[in-house]
Image: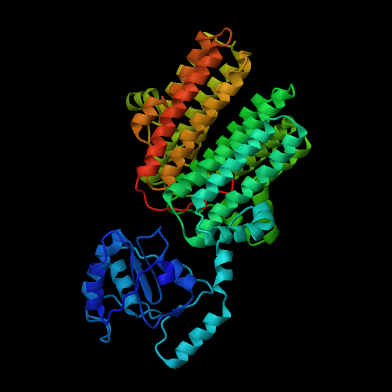
Amino acid sequence: MRSLGFDVQVAADVTEAARLLSAVPADHRVALVDPRFVGHVHALRLGLTDPRFPAATVPGALTAQPEARPALVRALDTTAGAVGAGVPTGVPTAPVTDRTVPGRLAVTMDAEGTSVQRPELGSLVAAVPTDAPARAEAESALASVDDEAVRLRSAVKAHDGFFTTFFISPYSRYIARWCARRGLTPNQVTTASLLTALIAAGSAATGTRGGYVAAGVLLLFSFVLDCTDGQLARYSLQYSTMGAWLDATFDRAKEYAYYAGLALGAARGGDDVWALALGAMVLQACRHVIDFSFNEANHDAVANSSPTAALSDRLDSVGWTVWARRMIVLPIGERWAMIAVLTAVTTPRIVFYALLVGCAFAACYTTAGRLLRSLTRRAERTDRAAQALADLADSGPVAQLVAAHGPRIPGTWSAPVIALVGAGALIAAALQQPFGSRQMIFAAVFYAICSGVAVARPLKGALDWLVPPIFRAAEYCTVLILAARSDVPGALPAAFGLVSAVAYHHYDTVYRIRGGTGAPPQWLVRTIGGHEGRTLVVTVLAAVFTQHSAFTVALTTLAVAVALVVLVESIRFWVSSGAPAVHDEGEPA
């Protein structure tokens, strides 16, 4: 217990235990352990030190964080006299596997409404033997299992990609242990991974073959560190809201910064691939928002009965199909390995061609599967799911005004169809109308109206999860097309910066929702215009600044303004939110 950071005191009975606990400062975690406990240290670590849960228990041990301590005190009062006297009247009977005082307290806390986490121990031993034979059996089981080996295995994410599972995790887990033994934190490793990726991007920006080779090697090393930070968090149970946010946002920052580095390197060699770099970022960001929207829409759906999901479960029973299906979606491990190798041996243009083809195929595959699931399932979407989709839609003042006062078109598929009509008209105009034409502004106004009509009703339809991805594709593609068609020097790099800033805001929204803290405040969404407001602004800028470098300056100014607002508010929130510790295993993409 002392090795886990606890001060140890011995209580003769429940009454004395309550007195000793009352003397502990209110902001401290406390634990109760039966003195007869026999088990692995890692079993106690899992049960008593995980910061994600207010209360947790393993056989013979119970812990409560500050927010759960009042419930523990009430349970102690209820259970007073339980030691040596069986279960008192009115106290729920504990499971037969744990009739100890900590076990009874856990059951009482559960019964009174405080959820008590019971971690899966697997082969780890945690027992309270009541006689000599039982103790000998527990000690024999204890000696037969190496808890350090179990701890290392459990540090690896359960469902990961092929490349990560077989080429990174076999040794990165030992790097995680090395870091833990030297007091390094997951956030420090995450920061090291970011810095390594930024150096890789800088190497790619040199435009030399040596720089490209160094960039590929450094990108792979950055990915090793990226795996290590999560494994370190699981190995040492150092979960935090800040860590989950850093891990999620830095992954995107690393990849998109590397795209920019490749584009800069290509430019040094006389090849302009900024449109390809921006296209790769747009495609990858849209892939992610499809994942996020589908998962949020079905996070707590009731009565899922999709035959497609049943088929997927059956395929999971065939080993090779699991790895094939994980690889075909080009998750982050496979994607970064491909980028690193192609950077070292080919050119940035080929890297982006491969990325666009691979990610487009993966997006079609995953989206088709999710469409089939949505169309064949019989499920009722909850208010929470509808609100999450509304938050992910990122509707600004114009769309909100239309939603409040405009028509509400009935129909199961009306929302995605209307959103698709508006987005299609907008993108078609951007492709066909002359750069800077007023018709483009009319198309943006039509898109804004369609956006408001699409979200006027709660997004509870079978395909309503498509609405946020459609909005993302419309906004990002419009910026890309206008910058590419402007033929203004520097317009595409400026557009890359603008989409990066907006994408950060959208990722930030996702991880706030996933962390249970809600979407960013409405004042922030209104300040940066919402997706339809920003699209209108960009089309107006294209119409007003059609000469020389003014369009580039305008895009750059808009990008800097959006980035400053969203970054300052986001950092303020994540540093001071006080949100509970989380660790998001996330999607492998």
